[in-house]
Length: 309
Image (tube, rainbow, N blue to C red):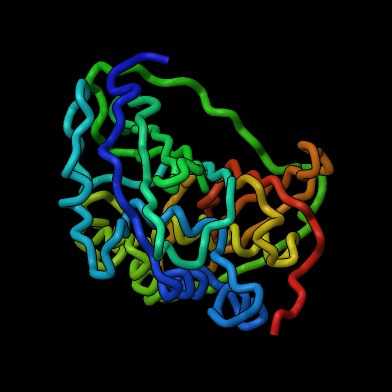
């Protein structure tokens, strides 16, 4: 595929994490004391929750806070306009889990390697930047995870770029009730805890950016909802075993505000991709809009989590 910006490679970023970082991540997305293998570093099955690599491009290798706006402006894509990172939200993400992540990066050098797949002009609504990000162990070249995702730059379109291809849809079944339903009552502190993983976008901490973007104030990270829903699917369908999920994706459809209750509905389809069953799901604000649509996962369905205490 060709087009403006396509094939541009961002400078490789070294990333690093401690066991403490993975414990914080698990806590922030809703892992419970019944899942000590995600929450206690001395547990014999201690493991990193599979979606943790999503925070590493934000966190990089620092243990301190990150200036989100400065980091986003650091590199521009040749051949396309310079977009305002103060008005950006997530579009969609698909994650492939290729190798289990070690509980600390100590002793190895890891990099995120990001390539632009497309930059699409959606007119008045804005611009979509689609990328592929691989988490790579530099010494061996092993790829641990691959994320294909998009960022939506609100009201930053009409620059004459391509409209982009239609995306594949994975709607949930409409002829039967979901196999699993789980929910979470968020609080004003939900995004303030999640941001400590390294995603320090002010949109999720102070009301001014959200008011400028038309959201009315603070909204919760789309990736919080994304990671929380993945945790629930693994807990309820995959026995909380990180080996039981191979792929996971969703589209960010509408914002969630602190204090909203979010509800995930999931359907087993019975459709197999080798040993993996396709799961369809959606997340909505209770009594309101769908916030994560196009949800799909490939899993081994073994039943609810067994108590790991």
